[in-house]
Length: 349
Image 1: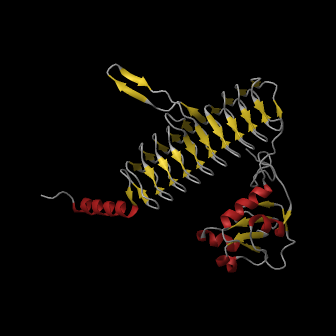
Image 2: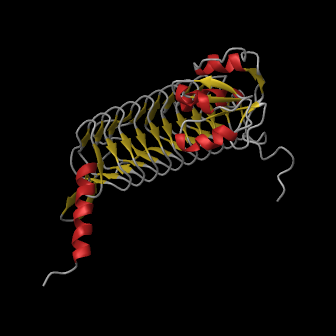
Image 3: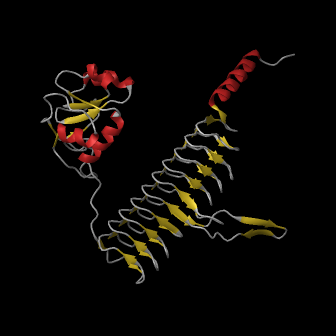
């Protein structure tokens, strides 16, 4: 299928808002970067990868393995660390940043801002009369908003989302299509992606001689400011205490958070990972894809859990672990080396 002239450009206008053009000085101010002498008035219209950028585009380099592409780029400007300035070709302005990736994020967001909230309520939305919905909020088609819900200024609720009784959200939250929220309180600028389920019963039951006895789940989910919850992720409400996701934490798609889990600030959990109930993650913890954490564990601040790790005991602050059962990275690879040596020797008589 032909895309049409210009439709293969980064930031396809069919899907992404566009702003600009901007001078290099304006972009540098937004990114906290340094403008090269004589290039402040250079006008740029978009962002693009090094390989396809043209004279009106700005690109970036944050990984040295793409240095060859930097040397060959036709971009009008490129964001680089000071160590790579000498690799920037003649005719391309070097915008110097301490963290080129962060600078790129800020500049890309300037060219492609999030769509503005469009205040109003779709006529098909069902809103309980006791709900308090700010007049600046955008309520999409077939949305259901239950009793005593509070929706703050600038919030956007996507099509067919269900906001159940008593839910409270701060300002500028975005709730994706078909998401459901119950028994939860949201701070400001929380983004719940499509299909996510927030606040349902946790997996809690007592085992009796007659079978399972459901334990009432009487806690809530607290999503603090600037939290993002990926598509089709599930966060159980607490049983005897709240499930809490700390400020700035990012949860990927298809992640499961068990009841009573306490996640600190600025943590990150990659897709298909999960925690059992009552796990505690301190601040800045990172968890790789498909990693699983048992219940009632504590993971110290800035620890990193590798992909597919099986965590069955506490992890010290700052420690990197991998494997199942999870162990420190150096220990894991020592064990792998021993097994390889044994395999090469073959069976012993």
